[in-house]
Image (cartoon, rainbow, N blue to C red; front, side):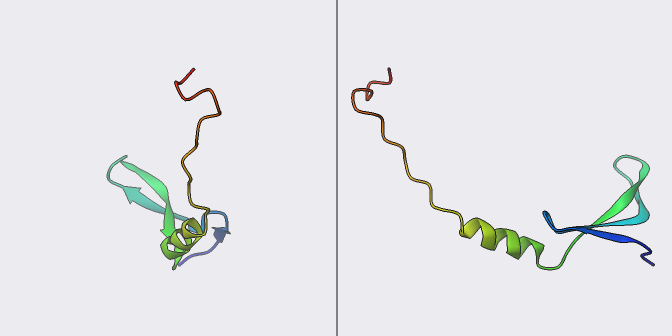
Amino acid sequence: MIETVTVKKDNMMLFTDEQEWCSKCQADRPQVRDVAGRLSTIEAEQQSYPKAVAAEPFPGQADGR
């Protein structure tokens, strides 16, 4: 049962007050869950970024100085 939930809209991760045993760190840790559609939303946002364009040196600086 989830009693309290917080949705951080900037990264769309779900944090609960429930604790879960972590075998790697040997401690109870807060549960963290991905919100449905998170990965596809990230991919769609990254596809909307402008494409990178190679920079050209300023005139007279082609030799790297």
